[in-house]
Amino acid sequence: ICVDENACTASGESVYAAALNYIILCEDCVSFEIYKKALTLTLGNVSRDYDGEPFDFDTAPASAFAVTGLCGTDELKRTVTYSDNPVNAGTYAVAFDEAAFELSKGITSNYYLDTSSGKLNCSLTINKRKIYVEVNDRQTEFSGAPVNPEDESFLSYYFDNNSQEGFVKDDAENAGIVYRYNGSTVPPSAIGRYTLSVEFTNTAVTDNYIVV
Image (cartoon, rainbow, N blue to C red; front, side):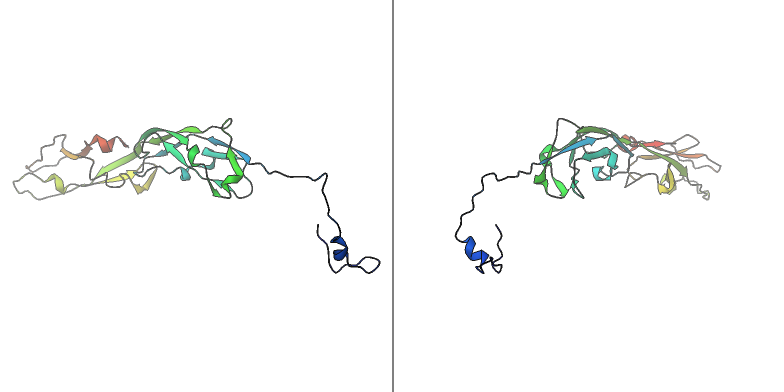
């Protein structure tokens, strides 16, 4: 009980002094218990094009990590596991890591995850990167020796945005580049005009691409 010791009774006696003569007992006191709040998490399928980097679920849209039950600005960490390292083109199983349940904003102990509802699994699809390739024209003087394929070059562009490179990281260097002259892999030495094309033979790289 809060008593103002400067307040007085009608007789002039201090209320605080008077209160010292009593023990106040609470017979019908009310107690409160604040329970943890349930969170429901619903994961949604995600897809993106191959870019040579491991997929980060923090970059997925909000609809792919829908949480209901959070208060204010509280946020749940997007801690998920993958069936394999999500780098190369393919489909991966994704699951929320319940053991790592933690808030990135707010107090984790105020919540629990309701696993009886929602959806704690989804799939991630990394699509092959669609690119187009242009082989550069070249002229050289006759020397009697075969031309050197290492002097050839090409440019690659991302199909959906040609301001971006087609091949990413060091994939171009590791793609197993083979140049053909009029369809032949044998470099020509005779004077003439040749149709130059390029192909890529390292499937560990090319399996992540569609060349159009």
